[in-house]
Structures are given as structure tokens and as C-alpha cells.
Length: 132
Image 1 (cartoon, rainbow, N blue to C red):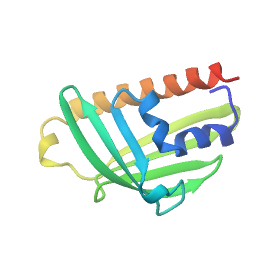
Image 2 (image 1 turned 45 degrees about the horizontal axis):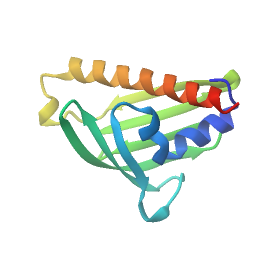
Image 3 (image 1 turned 135 degrees about the horizontal axis):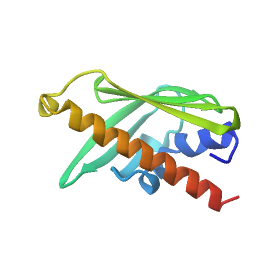
């Protein structure tokens, strides 16, 4: 991404913008006007094909220019975005609990998530390039 680690962090930590970039996100917002800090809560509406669902997430780490992470639901998934020099952004997605609706479909879930991550990072990089 052609930006600084601090700017990349600001883009990701402003979760309300995620719907602009991710093909799987409909809407996200911090609750009660909260912001990117450890312990902050946000809700999201996601989609996969015709399936739409809402989730609640809690921010775990909020270190500007370094890392932004959150956990979805009651410890179902952990997302971590890490920011490095020359702005390399890495994304770690950990499935912590297998919900019944995903049992037997973990390969599909992995592929769906990997495509979404790639599409999201590309869209963020393109949007950032347009604002330079």
C-alpha cells in the first residue's frame, strides 16, 4: 500500500469504512460513537451470497501504525491487521470456534475468507492511491 503504516492503520481502524472495500461487508459501526481503542465494541452486517447476518465485535488491540485486532462474537473469529515499513499490511484470520453452520464446510469458509481479504486489501490500496 502506498502510504505510511499510521495512515494504513487509520483506514482499517475506522471500521465504518470497511463496507467501502470489502465485498462481504454491508455496514459496520462502533457502538455509542466509540472509536478504535482496546475494548471498543462495533457491530457489523455481513453477507455471503443471499445469506446476511449481524455480528458484534470487540477491539483487542489498537496500536496506531502497528496493529489493529478484534474478536467476533463470543470468541468465534479473531482478525488482526499488522502494519509494517514500506507499508506492508498483513492480515491474520483465526477461526477460534467452529459454529454448527460451518461444520463440514471449513474449506469453503477458508476460500471465501481468503478471497474477501485479498479483494479488501486491493480495494483499500486502490482507494489510497486515488487520494495521493
